[in-house]
Amino acid sequence: MKKAIIGKKVGMTQIFDANGKVIPVTVIEAGPCVVVQKKTVEKDGYSAVQLGFQDELERKLTKPEIGHLKKADVELKKFLKEFRLENVDDMNVGDTIKADVFAEGDKIDVTGISKGKGYAGVIKRYGAQRTPTSHGGGPVHRHAGSMGACSSPSRIFKGKIGAGHMGSEQITVQNLDVVKVDPELNLIAIRGAIPGPKGGIVCIKNTVKNNKVKTGVQTISTNPQKASGRNPQKASARMR
Image (cartoon, rainbow, N blue to C red; front, side):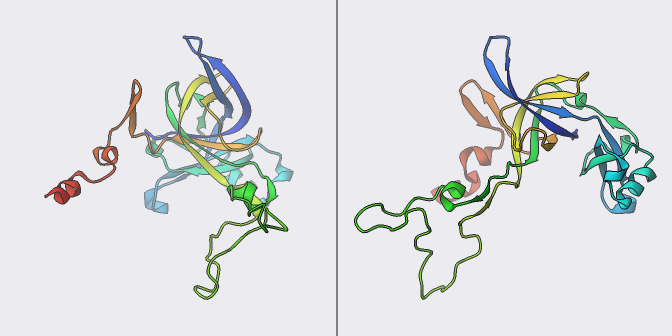
């Protein structure tokens, strides 16, 4: 069953497991979220629910947002996010979703906005190399070097790495482990780091790439084609 919730990044800390091993975790204040809108196949062409998170003052919202929330007869919320879930039929407008929707051991994906770094050069932004620092190199060493041939194609292709705004992008970290859930405080501790600064808004969902099973030291893929890195039928055809 697909599950989802909106939360706020509190910060990082560490938890000790039963064997005394340190686990670095990120603490997220997950919910409570309220169902603001329900999409149906008959009316909208697909099934989804819109969740609202964090109470907000009326003067800080626009008139369309206020009307949308008052129509649902729910408290005014600052953040709204739509999720396509499998159990939409079991949910109704006004229902509350709390952190206990997830449990210890769940595999999740976390989506957030990364920290903004401002304007950055190509070395910091993409890890490009400097130009030669001897034998006539220079006078600058952190500027862009050759961008390609001059006569053909006589232009720079879109997507070429260069200086520019670094960070402030939507990033999803997949296959993270839920280490601990505190339903009373609506806190979820997730193994490892997640994108964004403290206080940043994140979305937590069931993972979509949980196709590996760890057995001791080895990691075995449950998909035979991915395990071999190629299609076994095509491989046998080549051998013939």
